[in-house]
Length: 228
Image (cartoon, rainbow, N blue to C red; front, side):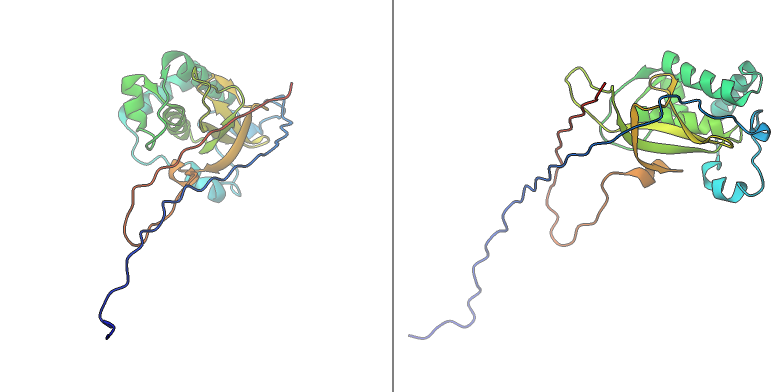
């Protein structure tokens, strides 16, 4: 009996992997007062002007791009309401987005444009964050996108999701967060995981696939416990 040297070996399909990666982290937050600073004089009035040595490092977080007229007009109107006071403007802006916009949950997809959020008067936390950033940058304020977790962010179904909020750079105070979803400055209830001038640079997962493409999904279960 002769063996068939041309015979192909049987193809055994690769098993479908379901990797599980449980992890636990304990984070201590210390900032109970979000206003524990004094803004340097050049930045107390709008439009904000930074010192010469700060300008290059903040350039990407001040870039406005092509802002829609409605964004420009709203930024100017809020500045007038605040009498061109930087801190009053930030507080007024945060409260405005909190009270005048419907908050939604959209667990997938990039943030929508600031003008779309304005037109619809509704959006997820990342949409409100991008609108906040656009309105700040029109007043010369350096602003960046932050992704992380917030202590009191459970939905009705008791699920947890990543949260987003903006940070602004204030000389004398450094990077300071505001949460338009709650209409307040950020203190010790937020834990930042990533911050960047663009939301695309804060994505939690990014990668490439080689070979035959299989459908893949990611499922997670997040639990947050706070100590009083």
